Length: 281
Ligand SMILES: [Zn+2]
Ligand SMILES: [Zn+2]
Image 1: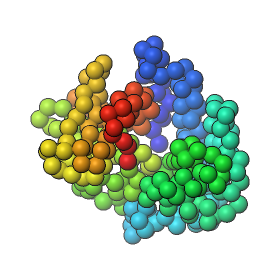
Image 2 (image 1 turned 90 degrees about the vertical axis):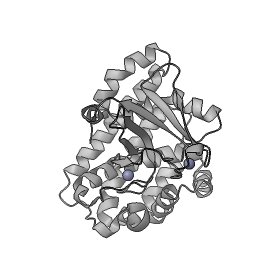
Image 3 (image 1 turned 135 degrees about the vertical axis):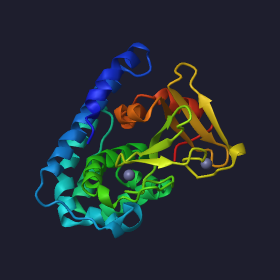
């Protein structure tokens, strides 16, 4: 797993100075990235992690039950309490007791929530949150950040199984949605998407919506950032979806760019897209 905290620290100071993110947000994400790395190392050091078959991919379609595997639950459950404590420490108003109790007690809850998450079923996620006395966004945040280091670990271990040359808008490993895109400028022009969950990065069609896949030029547009030419927002008038994009100069630079952190550091771009009526998948 990439050491997000190091890349984050390099870039965060300037953003605080520019008033784009607050010092509290920086402290919170710093702690969150350290949490991810600690959990990832715990998984990587385990002698009996769950095994995947290539037919389990993408996990959203065929391998969802991996989360109910005894070895997966044994690994995942100890990571839940520290995450909830971290979120509660930085956001004292948020309470996740019911959520953590029911996830720990009943694997069926795990099946329901991972199913709703992968299907992006906002109705079911809303019901799930209500039942556990929390907000839908907060519940999704906790579940994503809990599963993330586990999926990053599983992806690294099974990277030979991930189909290449896939130009779909969903992650070929886990089936979740991309969080952020990168485009290499100039005549190279290659475009990549990075999964919001397992952080897999895959090449995608240069001219196509990253949310619905439309290739209709009349539906596709990008909004350039007023303050920073490093970024643009690709929007689609067909599905009203958007994705934030980092402009990269070269293929080498792509490997140095941590898209998971870029996503966290650009909330002003999300606000701009939402104000214009676009939404994330
Ligand atoms: Zn993924
Ligand atoms: Zn679209």
